[in-house]
Image (cartoon, rainbow, N blue to C red; front, side, top):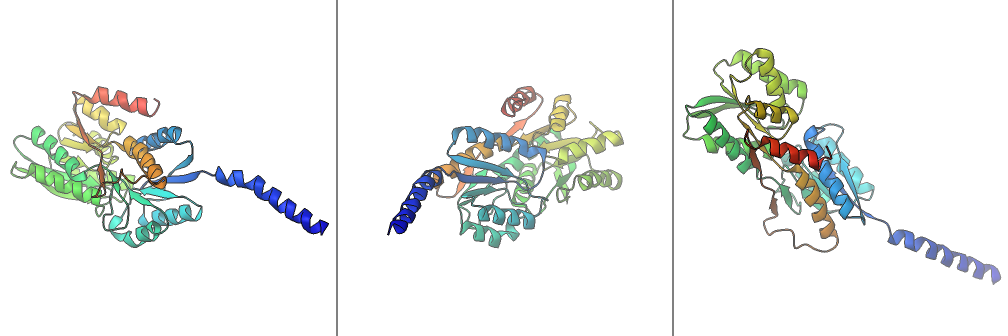
Amino acid sequence: MKKRLSITALAAALAMATTPVLAQEKQALAFVVNAASDFWKLAEAGVKAAQAELPDFELQFRYPAQGTAALQNALMDDLVAAGTDAIMISSADPKNSIDAFNRIAAQVPLFTTDSDAPQSKRIAYLGSSNVQAGIQAGEIAAKALPNGGKCMGFVGFLGADNAKERIDGFRQAVDGKSIELVDVRGDDVDFARARSNVDDVLAANPDIDCMVGFYSYNPPKIYEALQAAGKLGAITVIAFDEDPITLGAVREGTFAGTVVQDPYQWGYQGMKLMAAYLQGDKSQVPADGLIIVPTQVIDKANVDDFEKQLKERVGG
């Protein structure tokens, strides 16, 4: 009897010792991006800022080994297996990831950013209106090319919704203004290919007098190619995002302007949104599932102020 009582007492003591540890275990939130790119540093800074305000959560910022849907989806599976409680993802290929998204969404709350997958069971999209961003880019082109022109576009994933919507928005804005987007070359986030795409256009399409870089790294590759060819400033360039080379080109006048998103807010607001959702507050999710963070046009007039804000956000 004494032995039985001592074992019972020991079990009770162990339960009392471990219960507070379990009670203090933090819920984990993950932000998964579509590829390794400097563009995501601002989102990472936003996640870091949110962490300071969410001490009861563990926030993770994750890059896939490569920018493919298969590796992204495998990473999400790994996160769920490791006990992650909610995920926000910028999908490399939303249309071909629906089944994978639905599998994840059946296990943890799933949110999208940057490139949406509205056909999936994701809870909400938080990010830019890519159509509106494309329209803003088209408005830059219309202002810079009052007599019209022929443009070539460059982008990472041709099939991604964010790419297609920006391209559609651009075409919508230049319709009737004698500006033609002749074609768009994809590179699958291969930086060497992104550069060679521009070199190839310069060699094969001498009638092109306008270039549009639809992903963050495309404008710097356009800059490199034009500089090497001695055509910097001779071809109108419309950019997206805030790579330092892009902002420098806007400042010196060799780029007409750039349309910037706000990935810092994607990271910051995204983590706060998921934390609230896990705590039972679903009021921040609108009926249409879309939370739009406005985009902004940066030109010579406001580039200095914008760059100052960027440095403050990343601690530079």
